[in-house]
Every structure is written in structure tokens, then in C-alpha cells.
Image 1 (tube, helix red, strand yellow):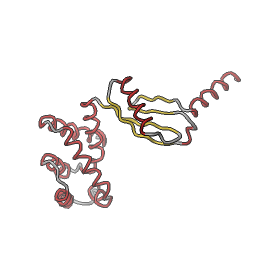
Image 2: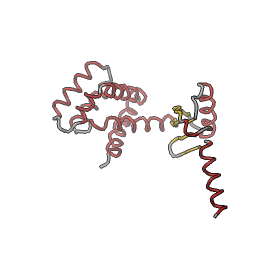
Image 3: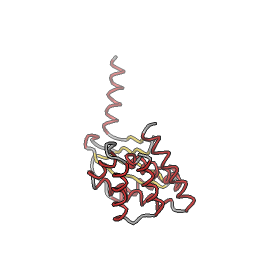
Image 4: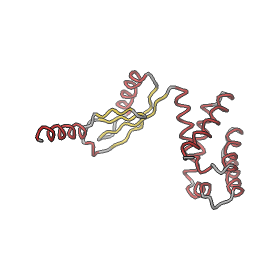
Length: 182
């Protein structure tokens, strides 16, 4: 089974439990908190993901983490379950899949906006609002800068891509000219 299939299975299970407890947002926040903590400690994350370490050592690591972080008992049990079933190495993917399930439930679309220069917060908000009206969903965009696009804007939300970059326009013109020359 692929990593994403495994992650989806566990994320769906936790999401179902969260819905029953009416804690979908809280669980999402706590999962992100755990993921961020583990990413900030690469040696710990590496130990949890390494198949050489036995599950009892990994369980001790999780127990120590749980002493530091205050999270719901259900999330604590979930993390321990991941260790017991040797699935803790998929924690990043599980958090990502959980967030996707939560976004779907809350009617949120996440994406990225790529420009040749940094956008102001006001420009970003205007784009999010325009996309919200178009998609009929709340839109959250992450800004990225790529000077290679020369100018214009590229927005990617899931499978949907709006590409109004100068680089793309120039490439299209080049293809048209090549087609006419041949």
C-alpha cells in the first residue's frame, strides 16, 4: 500500500472520530502542532521514522513528547496507535490528508500564488476574495516568488491552474510562430 493510501486510511479514521466528538478543528490544530514539533526536532522525527528502532523505543519517545505537549487524549491514543502499528513514519502525510478532509468539510480551498515579486497582503486578499466568488469556497493562498516567470501571476488550487504569467504567454507565442514557419 502506498504512503498516501495508508495516510488517508488513518486520517479518515481520526476524522470520523473527531466528527463524532465535534472536535474536527481542534484535532486538526493539535495534529499540526505535533507535526511542527517533530519537524523542529529532526533527530526525533528521524528516530520515529527509522525501522531500525523497535516500537517500544518509539513509544518512549512519544510518551516524552506527550509530557511536553498538552493535547486531547484521543490524539494521544492516536499517536500511540501509529507507533504500535508501525505507521508513525507517515505522520506528515496523515496530517496533510486530515487537513484536506477538514478543508473539504469546511468548504475551504488551499492553493498557492506565484508571482515575480512579493505581493502585498492587500493584493493577496483581493485575489482570495475574487477566487472565493469564483469557486464558491473560502480560499487560502500561500504566496511564492519566482522571478523566472518574468511577470504576471500563476495560481494553483488543487488541479485548477490559472496561468497568466508572461513566461507562459511568450512560450505560447513562440509555439505559434514555430507552427506558422513550418
